[in-house]
Image (cartoon, rainbow, N blue to C red):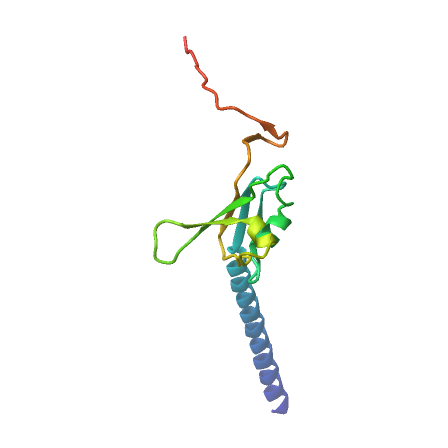
Length: 143
């Protein structure tokens, strides 16, 4: 009789252990899917335009630094941030001058998930060669 009770208890403990493992895997999967969706995009006149993992305390200058920094010949250093606003169809746009942050005239903005940081270029560039380009018109003649 004791052997049967012992086997039943072991089966119950084993089933509870399996349920606990499934619960832990499920919660980890939920947490990872939530963090995977949180990105910050740095584009424009930076050395390495990139998609960065969002961190709660990530600032504008940290994101630009992670993207390799602004090109040295860019003296303007104007940044436009496009931000999702809850309940709105369009993004909110904020314009910031990096020089003012460096001189501590304005605060370094804390970024939010899915922000798009666009460092405005001094000149238009072609790929990684950094040649200034002029707008041109192309006429294609189809016979």
